[in-house]
Image (cartoon, rainbow, N blue to C red):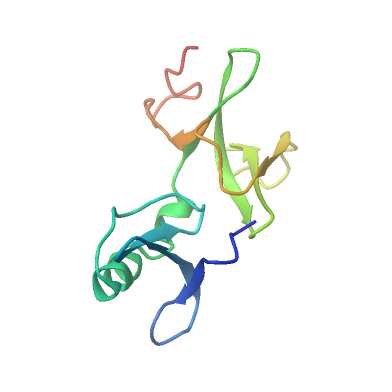
Length: 128
């Protein structure tokens, strides 16, 4: 859950929330929708610009989840709230596929990362 000092930032135009801005010293740190730092300490305008530029499109990308047992899953983010992040094993667009889902804490843990494998292969070339 976002800290009380985090200030929600909404994208101009459609007012979609794209992250938070956290006071730090004499500056501010931009935090993306997953609660992760996008900038170091910068001025307010730079923090806003960083979040506006980042937007939300990156959430739709492929991700990988490092599991506690040492395995790695190719996943997609299906829900992000200030309380949790939900991912599901990538179903490769199959509407009838049932794949496991994982509920992660917010901010998202480091075990959830942008996909590093080969997107053209079924297993993605991911090896734990």
